[in-house]
Length: 240
Image (cartoon, rainbow, N blue to C red; front, side, top):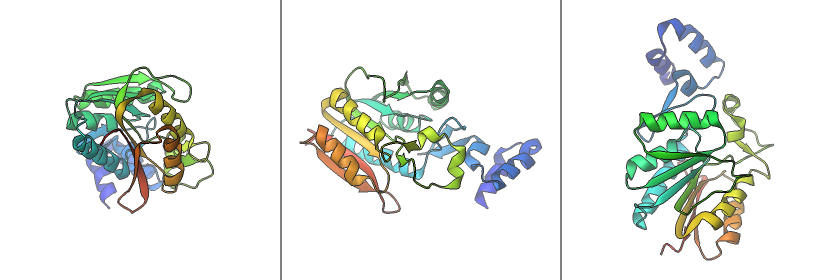
């Protein structure tokens, strides 16, 4: 199995037996190894941060495409709920002219993100903010987020029990953070701007309607992931 080979490759021999035992019990291989390849960049992960997924790689890829299409290469970007910092890091590395701010609400999370930014030589400003309570200062041309979006009563993969639950689950049927981001967007998005979001497979209509309320004239696009699930919402405000 590929994952077992990875463990054998990266875990010291004196810790291998323990690591394999944890893996057999369902502990995520990414935490055992301590990092994950995200968009070609090595991102360290531990139990303080969500493990980056392929779906989020595609969010970044699609966002970069839109930024290039609508000439947002010299923009100021806000990454909300940055976690490991993977989104912010890739955006800054792929489009060096961007100014990127990234926020999360826990020191332990931000410490992981800062380490990843340092290791990847990505110049990012990190902010400690709780978007459900704190206000954001300044204007941004691009706001991007992969927020917690799983409803509290929704069943998930058993392995996710090892990941930070507050990075997975959200109240209000999983919509709590989208409502907060919409308010931030109304206040902090530049007149011409993009909001890029990862969403739950069954949230397209709900999230679209939340943002239509705040951006009635914007073009709102829904796009699918590799498994053909509705996974992304893009709000293009005055971009045409």
